[in-house]
Length: 443
Image 1: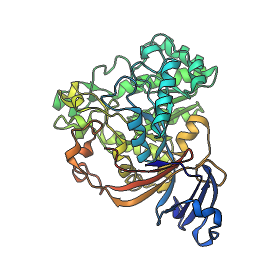
Image 2: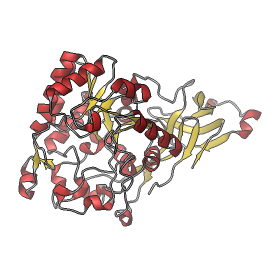
Image 3: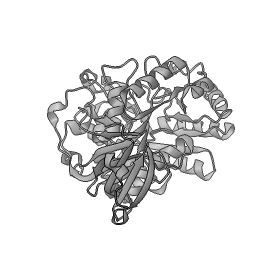
Image 4: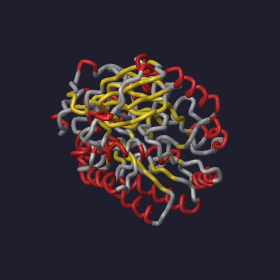
């Protein structure tokens, strides 16, 4: 349910990282005050018409920004739609979503940008930020009109999961983007190494007879990107890194003051190639799950700041996408349904305070996109936050695993069998863009 209310009063909410409860008052979409609940002023006559939300100790968390999600529209509506996926994002606490450009047609023209933005506005879900296709049709040959696409509303450009085979084209793209300070979001994947692969090159892929994607497919491409970044001064964001070696290379680049940031997919902090045993297509990811050592390096990279942010890499599919031998199934996990229960396990796994975990999903993505320091939870700011019941147990329902958008291991495997702790945590309300959303199941 989504409603507009001029005045909203939230009682007894706990801001992440604070021990006391607070009362938050939002007027016309702007946070009017955040005060300790014990010292909150008595409600005035003007408050009689306000929407009152009793948080009862729930956490108030800054709205998260997802740096990579496939919304499947236009072109792939059998898998999902902008309206559905943005509502699912909102239900997971994501108030902004960076939409991957691999739609059909690709986001390489103003008409497609306007279509995506119009459908997003009509859907009343999370705000959608379209990612411009770096090259026309994502073919890796002719550059898109990036300046025009930026003016139309694309804050960044990228190639989705389509590598650029020509260093000349990539160099030109970086020079072009640097000329008007447009960040490039690129996945480090060589165009030839591991082409046609579907699993991390290692003992598991060998045993299962699956075509592999070696770590070198990531590091060779990454080395080229970093060197061209050094030459052009382009703002470069490496999307969804997967290996220990990539973490080392980015750490070195940052030490050399290159304008580089990076993120990791949420699921790469949990799953490894061993989960593919039995040819389970629910673990088929475009960026492959690698070894246990790689997973440990990714976790350490999040903790020490080499990895700036965490994205969901959301990729909903219909049932037909998994009805084939493993190499022929379509890669990707539908992330939003299980995002919060997984995020709530990260403090224990990473040994980080919950606030620092949420910073990797909220503050850091905002800084990467536009340098914003707004939290959405401070007096005078546009309200952009959600209420979270952190300890509410979440039950798994395996009866829905055949529906579109349910392609996720937790829809077919118990949490315990995947080495996860009890699933818990649910978003109940989201306040963003002068609306109050009461969340509910999206499937």
